Length: 307
Image (tube, rainbow, N blue to C red; front, top):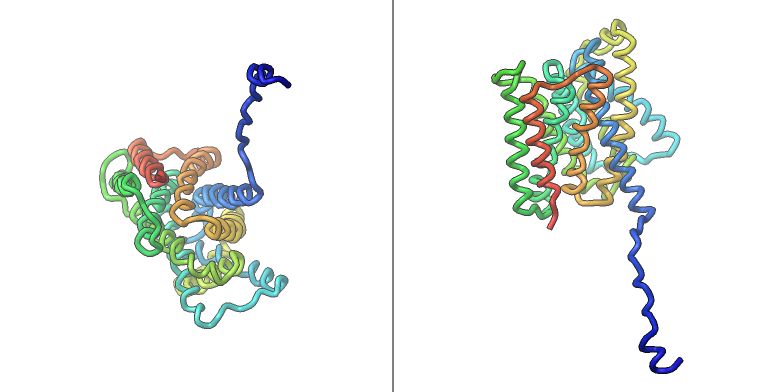
């Protein structure tokens, strides 16, 4: 080729960068999506379960059933027992993340709709971000702090909303106690996930949750004998799906990414929970509760901003 031909020849088209989807990225997406969907369904299942069980008894039977299944899993997989030095910490994790969380959420849903409860729980994104910044040294930008304030403001509005008017909602406050407990659980489990697999940690923590609930559930088996079938099916469903599978998947996600960033995806839960509650229960939260939920979601989006 001559110099002239070389100068006039068209240059090759630039290679367009292709979006690279890795197997690890897909797995992380699945591990995030599973708990989002299953936890969203739990809000409706709780309302069904409350037709036959008291709040704490509902929580105890849910995790008693999950514990029984996990005993079989532990035997089949020859799961080792936890280290003695970790047992108190694992028990505390279970008592907070399963015992206190489920008991408070169930009690709150006696007067708070599943959709409204899911909006309050979604404010855990802000709580998790603050806890991760303080205890895990994960950086939270300025917009993130604004988002935390909006999350708190949205929950406050929901807590003051009842039957279309304004009064303190004890049910909403109980749900917020559940929010605080699951946020603490999400952060404090991070060190343990360096020593235990997701399945091992989930198993030990659920056992701890079931034991902690046992002492507050004197009427559990009496209610089990008289509860309607659909309420008992809801208990079994919650033990396996929003219980074992969702928490195992959530721990897998936490092993692969920052706590605050993983927590930000919980913003998807109230949207799915609202749709499920409307589909199966015909439930729609009051307008002011929806407004508070919208403020919470804006706060969640700001917490999720990076850079």
